[in-house]
Image (cartoon, rainbow, N blue to C red; front, side, top):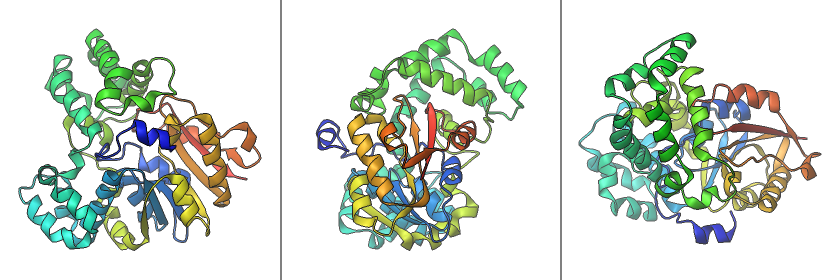
Length: 364
């Protein structure tokens, strides 16, 4: 990201306590595997750990030291705790001894990360999966806004297992009320989401109605995709992962993540800096989250070019468009080839429904 964005956006706090991109489609797109090297946006660490679980080496970068502190604490928890205690410590299951568990984890943490979390014991007590700005935004939605639109019984009915016809009927007859549409357009507007959920600067290159685009994607997720096993929907509606877990937290991946922790390298800096510092051996895949969303065209082109320089043959990059359309520029058409069919197929089952497009491009 350019220096001016650092000056306009506050990166000092935990913006995302969880990753809000679907790791299942990400792993299919990038094909992480033993011997492969992945460069990833760190965020809260969920998807970097999901890539790690498949056997790859992962370099994860972030401008925010707070986000990297989230990753470090997750790494320490995976290293020291068994599966159920891990879920309790992170806040997935109830626990009244998280501070005592943190004392056990502290020796695994760098000094500055210890200091960061010791300054916020209330976050440890709450469970670190619930302390991000974006998660607080959904808490406000769930506790203060949604009850004015739908009863708890109706919300529970939304996520009952149904076939596609049943989901469509429920949405049309019970969920898609005028109150739902009105509330959605206000609460998920550029102004409200920018102030309470993301950051106004993240919408700098967005045109048109933010809320209308997300509303259309929400309708798709609530009708075309199963709702009873969607971890992202589960968290938004109920404040936790009740019936489904994100990929890195699933029981079958626990040992794989733990065994791979020494293959995870964290970089305090931009994705460009991480590529320059650790890219001599090349990368097979790039998880870029939605970083192009809030960068200008010139910087996007520079990043596309740099990552191609650091890419192994037939390596891939994967990223999401939320509201600002971004793909590799025509000037790099001879270096990156769109994998549109694969991307469309994966996007059709993307359960993190905020995004308008999933993009996969392969090195030529």
